[in-house]
Image (cartoon, chains in turn green, red):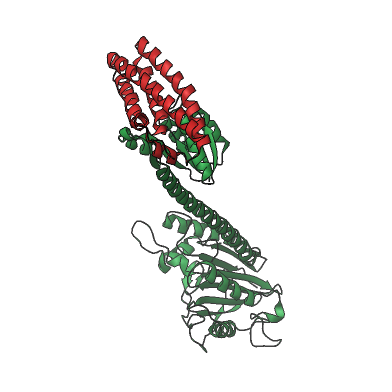
Amino acid sequence: MRILVAEDERITRASLVRHLEGWGHSVTAAEDGAKAWEHFQAGGFDIVITDWEMPRLSGPELVKRIRESAVATYVYVLMLTSRSDKSDIVTGIEAGADDFVSKPFDREELRVRVLAGERVVRLERTLHDQNRELAAAGDRMRHDLNSAARLQRAMLPRKAIENPRVRAAWTYVPTDELAGDAIGLELIGDRYLVAYVIDVSGHGVPAALLSVTAMHALAPAGEGASLLLGPPGGDGLGPVQPPARTVAELNRRFCASDNDGRFLTMVLFAFDTHSGHATFARAGHPLPVLLRAGAPVRLSDDGGFPLGLVDGGAYQDVPLKFQPGDRFFLYSDGFLEQARPADGKEFGEERLRSLLVSLADTPVPQLVTCATDALAEWAGEKRFADDMSLVAIEWAGP
Amino acid sequence: MARRGATVAQLFDEAELMAHVDNDVAFLADTVQMLETDGRALMVELQTAVAAGDAPAVGRTAHTLKGMISNFCSPVVQALAQDVEKAGKAGDGAGAAVASAKLQPALEALIVELAAVVRARS
């Protein structure tokens, strides 16, 4: 241990130094409190042994300065006090001393009290090192999470879709760095629009990994392997295979893998922007909203179990025929289940439909922002209890 | 072999002292030398403060002297120094004068006897 001794009386100081060095410590001696403070500021001491009464700076004042200083690790402080000055112990402890050694000091008493100080210092150093390692691990995890979140965001649709026949936009607000929601929006061959919203149960890394797995399986970039696409001349919309078949295949894959008890809900929508023919399929996911001439159209609630729950589960395609001006919305349950802080009331389907109707004249790209703002107003902040996704599609006509 | 003279036994515990310095006679010689210089200087300082009626200085100086003497296992002389310190801290000038008058020869005797022990053991 590196020990600083502050003692103005020369014989006691020499005696302390001799004993401490004899026990293997590295000792620096100061003839008064001010000199001790100078040594202390140079740094590196584990233990300070200080007299009470000293010229220029008293022992309690020295201890107070030590405790107020920004040293990185704990310094154990022993005060020397006369046997008749026991009442001073309160003052010394309040100033920050850890223990006392009576004067005239007994050699064995000094040895064991320094030994106790060594134990405290070593424990504190261990704790300090562990805290530093924990902080470093936390930083690494935060960095990794941010990197993973950037990768996840990179898999989201690059931009809104806007052409003379169709306009589509989306919004996506994760509740943590990583989201369990996934959305897709693609225009294939400049004609066939595919959109989906996936919601993985739970949050955090496991949910995000599952959502990314699903996005990867549905990515049309590697078209040969994409579950979205069927064989040429198939029974889907152009190259897009029927959504129910894609959903069933995803279900098969997730049932076959270990998802740690997690499941996914999904809605998948395929749309021929030339003809207005569309199909969607659901797996335990909230029913989409179709607005025609600004009013909701009742949709079939056919659907199947969430993905990953029932092996061989059946899913139904729901066909639609769009009319010019129709708007279609996919969303996650984070939108519906967001509670209002004042009374815990959820936003709900009715309020969502009313909101979308009220935004009937708002262009689709602005609509998704307005809808998010409305939900944020409901929640009291723009951080939601669950991941929130919304995809809005408007068909202008053939 | 430890000295067991009657005079020495009255002023300090030689066995305890030798244990305190780990039987290191050279170190004991150094500290006795320091007592001769620093202790006598403090005694002069103390007497000056007593004569000047400077009670805080009396208390402070006697306190330091008491701490110095405590290294030599001499409760008798240490108690005399403490009497001066108490009188000084209490602002009792007359008491300090009486106590310091007792302390001065006791300190001298202690120095002489300690030096004798050092000589005998060297």
